[in-house]
Image 1 (cartoon, rainbow, N blue to C red):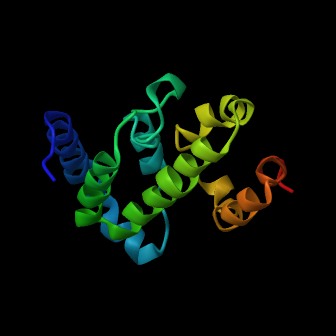
Image 2 (image 1 turned 90 degrees about the vertical axis):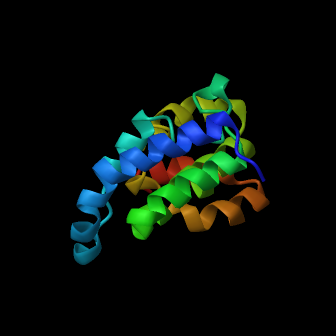
Amino acid sequence: MSETEEHELLRQTVRQFTATRVEPQAMEHDESGTFNTKLLIELGKLGLIGITVPEGDGGANLDATASVIVHEELSYSDPGFALGYLAHALLFVNNFYWAGNPSQRRKYLPKVLTGYMGNSLDRLHGLQVLDICKGDFADVLEGDLRGG
């Protein structure tokens, strides 16, 4: 696999972000067993939460290689944070985008792409695959966001 110029620019950007923002907080959050949600919001501002979501829907419209690059660079410094990002950006956002309908995307995607909803959706990650298979995704998502 050869990386494109776009991939190399992404790698440089995420590597710099990791060195300046991720590395300084990694040990503190690792030792306390906490997830830095403010840092996830910063990734949202960089457009990295919706890395695989089409641009017309607020994403970066990048490919799987780009997604791997982000995870690789984040994991050099803070593997726990990288896994949290993976859970939100790919296991939730990517699957939600491709399994959700246009109405659901309009309603929820703008908020989840920011990273602000990362904590409130934690309970959903294990349920999504099962409920998508049952065709009951909307009910679970709406119930979770109401606190139910």
